Amino acid sequence: MLHKIPFQMKKFIAIIPSRFGSSRFPGKPLADIAGKSMIQRVYEQVIQAVEEAWVATDDERIAEEVRRFGGKAVMTSSDHRSGTDRCAEAVRKIEAETGTKFEAVINAQGDEPFIHPDQISALLRPFLDDPDTEIATLIQQIRETEVLFNPAEAKVALDVHGNALFFSRMPIPMVFKSEENDWINKFSYHCHVGIYAYRTDILQKLSNLPEGMLEKAESLEQLRWLENGYKIKTVLTDHATVGIDTPEDLRKIVAEGVEKYYAGR
Image (cartoon, rainbow, N blue to C red; front, side, top):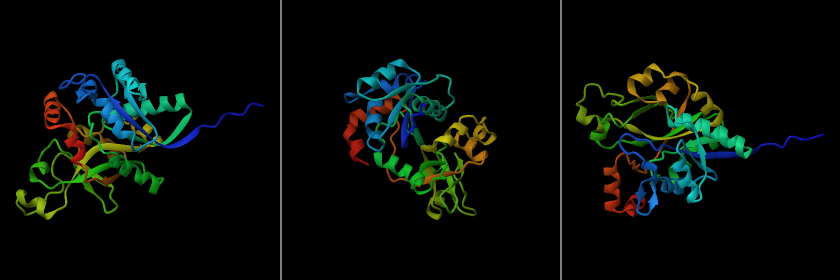
């Protein structure tokens, strides 16, 4: 009688969604940052915090670069709406290919080459402390009024257990009967840091959800999950995030010296 070989179980896998196409910065993952490609720098930071890290891409040029520096890459569809959907496909393929089941998936941004390994470790803590954790994400305290009122920065309101109640591009909550420039002195505001971790079964469910009304209004994907009743645990980080959206962002970093961005954390 043949016995089915059981799947190996591992707790965590980090997946780095990486697309070649970008309206503001085509080919961004392959951009050179002081002798290393952007995707290599992201990978090298992420792999310090997890046993397993893969780049999920829809472009063979990116996959070739990942294999060149010794990383792991998986090809995914070019039709995904978001990095979350790309992660969902990627983990299905990786589990089937490797015979390994993962309890939780980290979605690490492919354009943050200076992501700190401690950020990923902190994001995994809720899954170690509570197996019922569905989704976790990082947040950071807002200390400047300029950031508070910047619609490019998503703000988050929390419950007493550290779960997200709502995300908005507007400051939430407002401080009633107070001048706007004094709000930051009267309430502890937080902004969202766009790195997620998901329990693997929850990730597959999220990828099948239709776009929600709140998401359409705010253009924030995570509102789709809240609207459908999923809980998002937040984890506070003090590490600054440095995303690269344009060639100008990259030139500034290179001119100032990349070591500054690693050391400045």
